[in-house]
Image (cartoon, rainbow, N blue to C red; front, side, top):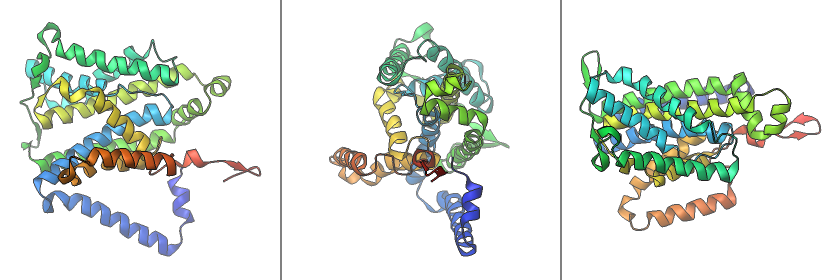
Length: 329
């Protein structure tokens, strides 16, 4: 497992000083970015942050436990619609709806995953695709008049912070990336905990993990529930930022993009998810002038990456850990 403290100790004095200055520079640049960039690029970075949250949530299921889930956008949709419905019908504060949407999506993830969690590989992949479509079609059919059908819903309420209404791209930028930082801190701690190690045991060999006392079914359900919950909370930011949400925002293709982010960045790698999200969200905007060819570029890039770097852009150190001569390499 990657240990930041050991890595830091392995650096020389000059390298530590250089790394400290580099990290400080990146943080200052990230904080100052909305003040020097155009609103369009600030908005792009807001959606990048939302997809980082989504990628991190899916990475728990795919990267940490090794379950193939191609229907993760369904939980993102549940969180978004929970925010829109409760905000419109009951006028609940968005700060309260942020964890509420996560809890509702997490419970939905638990209920939907419970009967299928024993499936593996391709079988689970196909079933999760069906779940994604089931949720999307349910939203279109407007059950009990709640979801607005194909037209969707409008979220008129806004976040307020000490009386300031959060509505500009700059405000959303700081809100989104603050949530990303909080999620990164929590997931990093979770990776090093007993739960994180249990997930990795299940991913590497479920039978061996079961034999050593790990409740594999519980570990898988926990990962699915937590991943769905984070996706649901991200849905609150998405619905508030977009104002209008509809089933078109949660199609199967969006789930494919989300799955690609985790694979492209490196399964189980938190920095890889950030890098993969940037590659899938920011690069298309840079290539907008070549819109006719950008999907061709993407396809070629994915093929080349699968050939020359199948472990992802920033692979997890766990994937390369091997025993050589009785010592860990």
